[in-house]
Amino acid sequence: MKDILFEPFEIGTLVSGNRFVRSATHEGLSDPSGLYTPELIRTYAELAENEVGLIITGHSFVSEEGRASKFQSSAACDDAVELWKVATEQVHRRGGSIVLQLAHAGGFSGDPEHAMGPSEFRSSPKRGFCRSACRGEIQKIVDAFASAARRARLGGFDGLQIHAAHGYLISEFLSPFYNKRTDEYGGSLENRMRLLKEIFLAVRSAVGNDFPILVKINSEDFVEGGFSVAECVEVCRELERLGLDAVELSGGIPEAGPRRSPVRLPEKGSVDDTVYYESAACRLKATLRLPLLLVGGVRSIQTAERLARDSCCDMISLCRPLIREPGLLRRWHYEDDSPAKCVTCNACFRPILTGRGFFCPRERSDDTSRGCN
Image 1 (cartoon, rainbow, N blue to C red):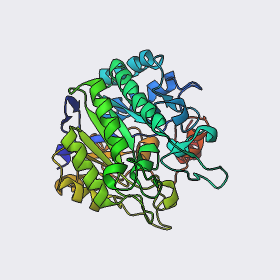
Image 2 (image 1 turned 135 degrees about the horizontal axis):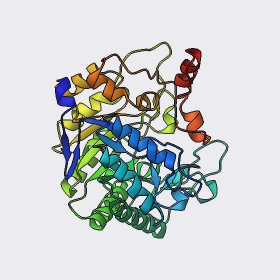
Image 3 (image 1 turned 135 degrees about the vertical axis):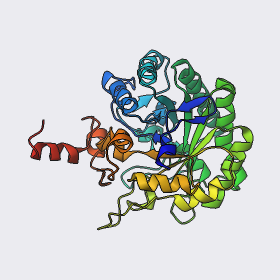
Image 4 (image 1 turned 180 degrees about the vertical axis):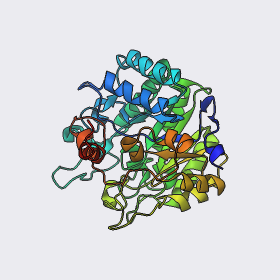
């Protein structure tokens, strides 16, 4: 079974060297305008060098009001394309594939003045209410995703991923927790998925049928009155009907708390290898023909093997373990199969969010204690 994990896998025209994915991870390495830096390009090249079959970039904002934070990458300007070409060429030279993730932060925009969601809500007690997006703004957002998709193809990416999870704009529209609208974008699931369908169809029109499109979606929100597993299944079935190439399953929104958020912390004293969304993935996989990527909690090759053996998913996505150990998959493939060193402490977010780099502080502390530099 381990051999199967390291065999090539296809998503449409995209060929991954194995069944492992670097799930989209905000690197905090773009310049202030959102353009790729040499350090970010090196990060992607290093992942490909270390046998990450498919790299999904950190979320890239499609329009300025949808920017989540400083040092986030931009997909909103043509200036990004030439630097993307450098990054994608570096990845391809090392045998990897790379997909650009497109996102709009919605009510969690880093600029509270321009934050918008399906309805008014507070993303933080320290912030005011975001405004409810009007129909004209919704159409501009759809157009922004399509424009960003065209740039992605020009930039040499092997595909793109629409970020519809974690409480960002599309997730907000899908979720009745946020979406209190009474027009054609609110109420029924058919209405709440309308924005995602419009974005998907616009993006497909922009890039053509031979360019893979993936969607990252919540299995559920883990809050009362939120997006549910049953709704996730229905949305994915509809997207498959429309021609989606693959789904990546995640879960949680910020309001779910640290134990259920997208970057959840383990229960106190827990050291197990719990796969966060496994039951939902098995349910979804049983209803879909398209490939399913699963992220969340995989910390050992044995768990990855079990997920593949049980046909719970087609590809295994990793995030935080590859921050601490960029060479984890090469180690599992050729050296030893001991669990990942990542302890899921989220210390890596401090340097990322403050522009100090993309690394695991715990690993650096350990290196210092061993006399390394």
